[in-house]
Length: 382
Image 1 (cartoon, rainbow, N blue to C red):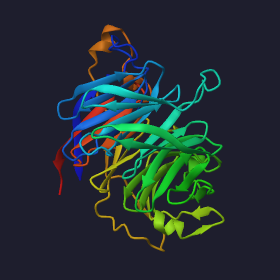
Image 2: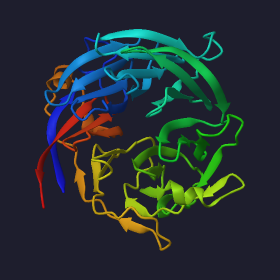
Image 3: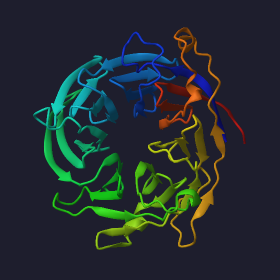
């Protein structure tokens, strides 16, 4: 099993550039550049996007958003010689960043008029893996499908193709290319949108198992706070308060669709934390062989999936125990001491998002107390 050790801990998202003791800014998202030769990870939180070299722990680029907060980002591989980074948050503006020139070159506003849409923000943004499409979700339930063109090195001519009103809150997006399906995490369950069909289609409702967590079995909420593609048609999803992570086969689930409802029978159930906290999102790496998910105690739960058969089964779901839990380290923080602030581990440390490098060598987690945590693989036990 892969073991990870602390590599670098960075406080690079402070709202004020001069505040090295800012422990209130929340960092929400992290994603590695989609290239096996790259060691860059992009993170967003507060009013900043940071692009960090995980080998050195050095912030290579930092962008400060002048109009509010940033919650989400996505890398595009549409330009053959240059991966473009998109981010968004408050003020409903998509920002495109060209790292080759270290510059923001495009602001695309979804709305006109600031007052009416003050409380609405971009909650999730995602590039289609092979088409010139950008999915953009707002917290008020609007899903925008935008199309774009490319020149040699940049995304250009971003335009709204159409939009859908889900009439619920949207928290995350994942695209399963093999099924041409967009999966949408919401506060009322998991939704599906068939990218191969017309825009007039009715969204699919996925029926996930009832809450198995004895502590919260009477809760009626169905908040999906993490959705990830494991490999091929295999999907990992986490329902808040369930205390587990479900892995199911989308092909098998779609075959059980009736009246726009899709029954999900997980093939694998990963045992996770029994926390009552929300919004801790998992990540998958090593071509589906490793899954990581943080909790609200500063720990990262690591699952070795390499021995799973990944074959649909009619038998009962297989329950899988966690193989390794990476505990929060004891930090020596001179900046907090200088400001006479309490250490961060006095409070809950919510690992909002994990990201795994394609090689499995690096693991990144971002927290609610303004830290980007870089871990590096140390040993492999056979």
